[in-house]
Image (cartoon, rainbow, N blue to C red; front, top):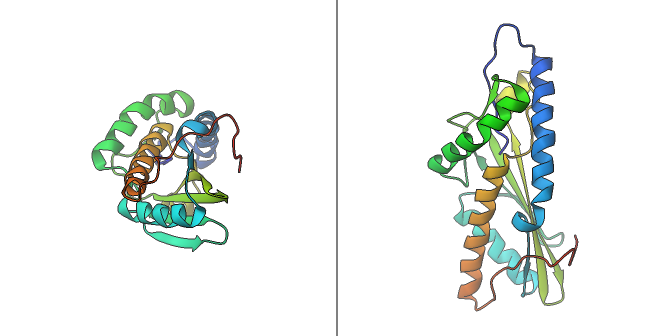
Length: 196
């Protein structure tokens, strides 16, 4: 949840802030990609129709209402104001972890806000079926219409520690739902198994 609060100083231009934000986004994108198998992909030993419905319920359980869905494409899109699906306390922990790196990359004018409610988190969940096996893939994006209207192009990537917490919550909730159906817990992909 790439929530950046901009503390505008008199000598920092919007263009400079946008350049600094891009620097942070590139770093977060790299971290995001390095951890994709650990955090954002799982294999479930169940048909896509079952997994899709349990993913749908999982998103709602986490306080992320579905705004677009297509079973034919295996796509669920959910949105809510940040810090959902994190709690306020979890968000403050993310801020504590991420702010030092953000300051190193973007200067003191770019930090995470204590209250991220001006940001909208979008979670895209995709399920692809391979017979009786499904592969689930999660993507996170953040937007701030308020800052965008001001001309500030903040990172659309989420802070890595926020992605970690949100992903763990999603997989834990999905695992509990699958257990009720006597389905094995989601497992990590092996190598590039079932690339989607």
